[in-house]
Image (cartoon, rainbow, N blue to C red; front, top):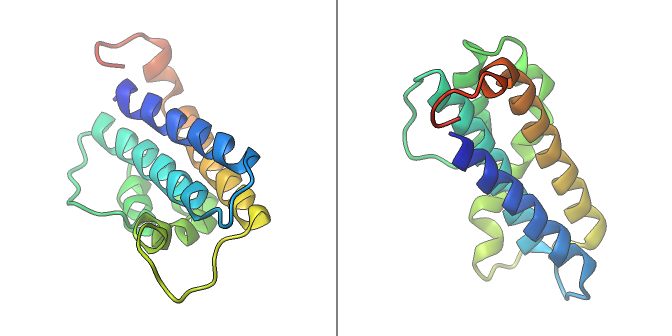
Length: 132
């Protein structure tokens, strides 16, 4: 589980680095933001032994997490907007490109998800459980 949280943090760091560059589009930042949120939510589900299928849908993961972290789906409802970036920005499309401002907002949403998950897991992580 800690590995998933570490990977979620790495996705945020990668997004931050890309955002600082001069890019024609910042869709890759949005991809890393989505991946960070997804990995963080899956860490929460794994900790509570909640089964989940193969999905990139943050809304679905939030609904599953609700039973173990009451209120999380409402607190993080805006993070659902990251879901399309799991795939949408990875392939050529006619959709408008992601600009720097939008990508920065996506990173902030991902930080919000990671922060909420860390808060929900605080006691567990502080206890130093194996695999934590």
